[in-house]
Image (cartoon, rainbow, N blue to C red; front, side, top):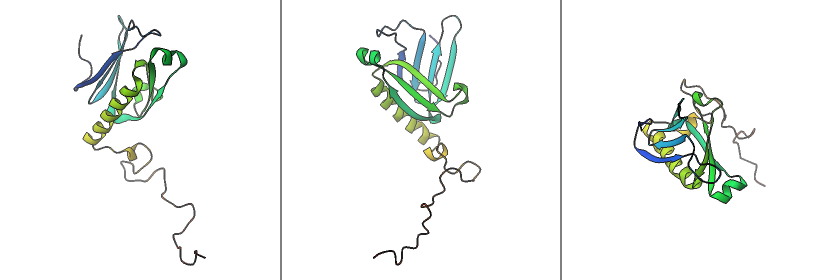
Length: 149
């Protein structure tokens, strides 16, 4: 099997069926640099997401997933190849453990690439302009003299 994702492999798992059997053709691979999602047998599709582009990781569990010990990881990304920026890793065993591994890898990747969360949630943009939060205090001017009784 050809290695698709670059970097050291931190986690690798096949998508599972409803009864935990790995008889699917979707493989998830997490490295220290990117997440790779490979689907298909004859016609294969590869989706590579750089870790520093992942903004949020959440865990969802249906009733059947809870019965069989599986979860769905929902990743909100700033990656144009994933369409609307939402990537779902469906039927993952030990979803909460995988989420911890992935969050650590995302944080490390951001540090290595000099990225901060501010670039994703409306802080100073790359052109030096401010967007999002204005830093105000809801109309207070900061003059607190005489405000105390």
